[in-house]
Image (cartoon, rainbow, N blue to C red; front, side):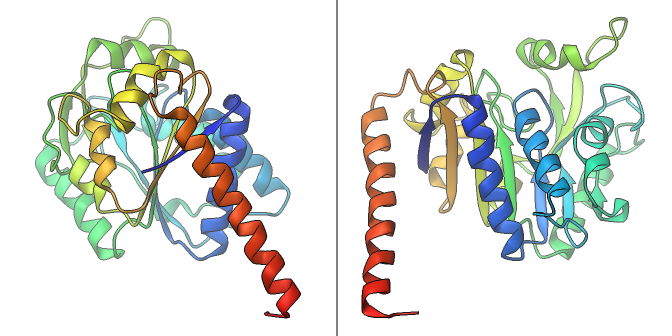
Length: 270
């Protein structure tokens, strides 16, 4: 797992945006996207980038990673409506290319299998954007979940329900149950980008990056992903034992790229 530590949450969003822009320009055609507070600055960057003509989503298929059970897709608080309000209404995504889990299905096992089948039919997810919960969850995979889980039913922790409470009307409680892309499903993506900001995320970040790979921190499974990057701010990085190493590695890599480009220019190599 590559670790990028930046000064603040705005820098994290801008860095993550550059990664998204690069991957789209290089032809990725399937993405997994999260809901919640953390990705909002990134979605704002994406909306602004699209306005500047830097992005094209017309040929991209997007998989929403989660949905609350017993919620219609158009209801305030649903993951479907969240992504529509915070991102899709600002970009040129084809609605037919957006894959949501159905929160009011009468057969959630069948629904989740259809979702997995759609992923397989499209050749797998090329790029996942992921966020951490305070307890180390990714998507709605709470501590204790199997690290090889597929898309399925999820019982939500009190912490998760509190985190999503602000997205619901004041008189509506966050549901206790949901459907979620599984850890095993997430791990099959070609690339995973994880973002986390704020000091309240420091324990989860440390467990994800440096803790043992364990179901007690589902995101720690990403240590075994061959192409994953976590972008965090200083506040979220404060509990990392090897923060200085990650920063030095990042700086050294940047210098190496600059030196390589200078060498190629001096040697006349195209």
